[in-house]
Length: 250
Length: 332
Image 1 (cartoon, helix red, strand yellow):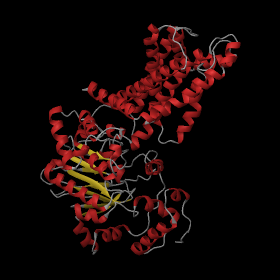
Image 2: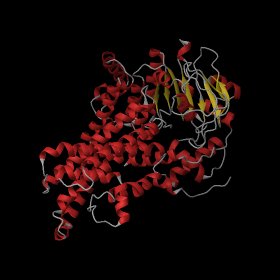
Image 3: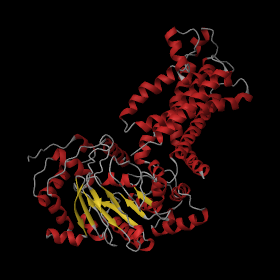
Image 4: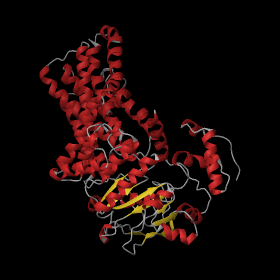
């Protein structure tokens, strides 16, 4: 029974994703700009600094960014959804809130991973090359961990916020710093001390690093650290989100 | 009270001009015999029609247990969470096997009452019961027993009518075999069967409402809550909706607990009225009883006689602000 409810809610989000094609295009726009404008724009400088191809470097970062944005928004969407959307219907259904939260979070995370795959495909078309096709499943695993972690984070935040006034706050003080301090657009080595500390505190850093390891075979923290930090982070945030979600009152 | 001639910028944004503003003010003047401060009175009037709304309640009298029975002595909702909710000494004492109808003021606490009955909000004191069960202690059991149509939309717009029904069936653990039959029956009753494969986003306001009601009835609830179901619908659609709801009330024996702005609707469809002002019950009885009690011709007059003519001034809550935003967005 639990599985059926979770499955139905998960499937609902996949259907929404597939049917709203315009939304897919819209959400790919921004990362695409980062990939192409930065990838090609900063390419020559990066090359001159002896760091190799910037497109190769930034593509995993941009994929991580897409997954981050999509997943955190699908979590935050809860604010809207519980007042004007379908979520209200599920909150009065005779099923534990935990199942609803799990179904919704997994659905959101799956959609975020699919967006990441779309970006990967676009990257490949733009000239990005994967070092080893066999490590693609590992890349998927990292996308899934990033997606779960940030869908849960978005859900946790949205469970506490009552309206959209806090939304801008979340955007500016959380999502953007998470992205910019993650090493998605610059290498983490030889940074000023303060930045080194900040970047190592950013959980997305480990996601970007893991993706970079699996896609281009270069890592800063190393595979084990990446996997451990992401798994523990995702588990903690899922736990937090489920306890906050089950306390939602309207 | 003095009249202020400005139209609130927010209202201009929603297409309310001085022209129709005047109509609203006229209405206040004629019906209530008073001059209105436009700035404060119109937000409610512009968006929700007349500044009061009715809380109607049709129930089936065949079986005692099907009828909502609840008592809320001194319920006070968390003021931080629910603005304007001052529910005090609200008690519906069900006495006879008569049908019940409640008429509340907007923000008098009706949505809050519904939320507390439907396990969405915890009362900070007092006791709420639905079908003999406590929503706080037995939320699962209570949730099986009611269906609800919220004031705000709760369909998944990307999904088809059929899919919306099927998700509901999964959430309420309705066996697959029974569910197909029941979905067909309800979609046919609400005249949506032919369009069951279309996504809900292509439906008109009336069709959405009908789909929401059909969905709320899928698990054969004992009580159906309708929170302002006819808000924003045209008279024909409202008329049709009421006919279908009454039919269901008779056929399925479901108690219908609803709110409406339109007193004439309350008078027509409901059997018993309960008027709440600022969280207190000030009158209860059948429409006829209330009319006799106040010597009025219509329920609307009775309502005004009971509640007085002063406009209740309400601040918009954050939900209200989001609702305005949603409304403006949908119009595009």
